[in-house]
Structure formats: C-alpha cells, structure tokens
Length: 188
Image (cartoon, rainbow, N blue to C red; front, side, top):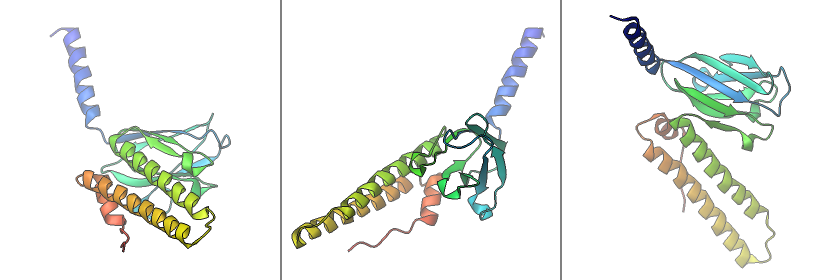
C-alpha cells in the first residue's frame, strides 16, 4: 500500500468519525456587552444552574463540549439573565447572537435551531402587533369590538403558528418540546 493510500484512508476514517461525533461548538457574538463579561449556558433539564461559563473576548464567546442527546438550553449574560437566547444544543456548529435588546437575539446553524428561530421571529412579530393594537385609542364601542376581534385573531394565529410548527416537527426535538410545554388557549 502506498503512502498516498494510507493518508487517504486515514482522512476518510477521520471524516467518518467526525460525522458521528457528539461534539457541539457554539460560536457567539455579543458586541453590545463588555470585554470580559461572563456568558452562562444552562440546560433546561438542570433547573437553572449554569453548566458552563465563558467570557467575552473581542465581542465573541464560545462553548465547546459533548452531548449525547439534543437538549433545550439557554445562553445568557450572567449580569442580565433575562437577555437570554434559547436553543437546541446538538452535536454541530451553532451560531448565537446576544444583544442588550432580547428581540435581537438570534440562533442559527442547524436545521432545528433555524426552525426554532423562525418560530420565535413569527411569534415576536405577532406579539408586537398585539401590543400595538392594544395601545391604540378607541373612539367608540364599535371600534373597541373591532380591536378586540383583531387582537383575538392575532392570538389565534400565534397559537396556530406554534401548533403547526409542532406538527411539522413531531418527529424531532422541536415538536417534542412544544407538545410537552405549550398549552394552547381555549378560544370561544
């Protein structure tokens, strides 16, 4: 066997092993935060205590580790836990953007996390419209009924969006997570 063949087989073997890896790599961006700020990661199943911490350097942070099964987790600045981003931790490369404005937090890089981000974006947009409509002044009872009907319609669309995402993903962790955690409201 030639040296080229040995190197070729070694490269193919390493590639096959990396495909079956249980390693995750999170590459994060936190440009709104200060150099040296602590970023925490916690698994939902662990109830709130961080399982990993890192520090921001040049507006970036990263986590790397191994995971056997996909898990729902949160990444957040230690000094601002409400500015968290939720994601599905899985063996792959995942990109996370943390911002002082939680609505600008993003996750991407895997099919699961891209779907999760799309769902969050949709719900956020409809939620903003609910808030906008509820803050509009109402001149009379007819306008008030129209407002209530429009807001009710948006709530129904939000629920449908969540349930449709669960149905489309019933065989993966997103569907399982929604079915386990979302209680659809009862509409009249």
